[in-house]
Picture 1 (cartoon, helix red, strand yellow):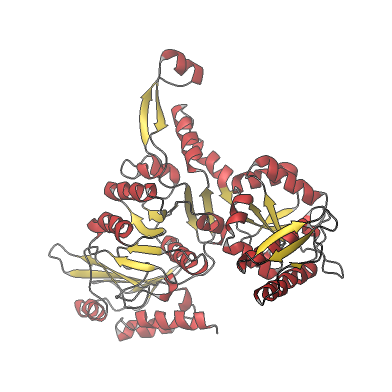
Picture 2 (cartoon, one colour):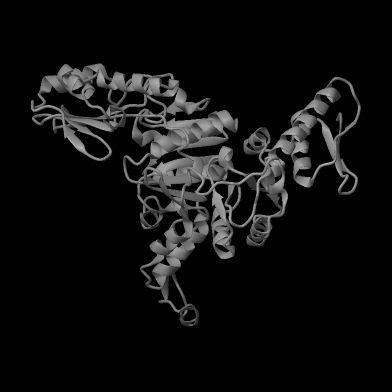
Length: 511
């Protein structure tokens, strides 16, 4: 059993140990205990366990006040939101009270750490764009936020602050759970002060990223806009299932630009083919990307919220009740966890890009909507994968390539060729896909050759740092030269490409 599974089991046991003995015994008899979602205890009713596909009555004995108090005395203090936790765990205990304030019901939700939950939106997360996550309760919004915090703090090395209202993201107690990586956590005394702590975080602690769970008030929406205007990346969840729901929510619609009614003149209304009173977006969206979690592993991503909201409002003004379906069709993401067809390789480990084979591409910073449309239009045999290790090529843009993101360094480590688009346009993407369909381009580079060239650059960099003044590397094609430039930059050396193909090569020397 992996260390992660052991830790998860230990944390689950801590939750179960807060329950009365007769309930503990019932739970430990269940074979699928690792799938447990919640335990529900209501006064005068039988205890219940909830699993992904069914609910189970744990015992025929009704819960009495003594059972409720047993749990209350074992967990942390309940806050103004009627939530408590268990120190250094991610579990959440929620209370139901009667009119006198006495607790008469408890919901004990299991908190777990799941790595890889943000793989389908990883390029958006690391791009610095503001991301809003929507979905019904229990589909994994908070789990996704937790993983965002870890990736941005540990792998992208950004200063991340979590505004943790219910201690659900980083766990109960003063020391945050390891699942958030090196992110810092600011606790919120009561839910009504969340917007105040949001502003305090930006003013006092100089974060590059702020993460917020369960935005639900107008004051929080205003605070979010203030943070975004100061250039800090926001990743948050909000009450609501879909983008269309959020647009029509008067309290939170400002998160995606807000809605206003505009009265057109007769001529303009005739020209547009609409009524005189139409709906329009009021301001730029606070969040540039919206992610709707439909269920575990099923997402709808709106990568261009400004355009999507405008299209929805235009459809509403025209009286068309299809805007939601059309939007989903255009932005649906299918997460591929494995390759549909294998990539054939010859004896030299060269990836064969004949049309009958499928190329696995890891897009980083590339507009997914345009990429999906181009793949469909051209009919190229391509799979978009969410894990760089499963890819044959990393596709990125000049903007992200120059910034030297972690993904590029990982591609170098795996020996994965990198294809750089000059611009994030449909035309550039189509040219790239046509290169693949013809079997040309840098993807035919042998991974063995790539690794050898990178090692050559590593060795030369060490020699330069040891005192040599200038070293010319062996001639390489453009994409391998780019990888060698990345190596030189990592060692803080100057690198230039000299000569003409096929003898063009990289030269290294000190700054």
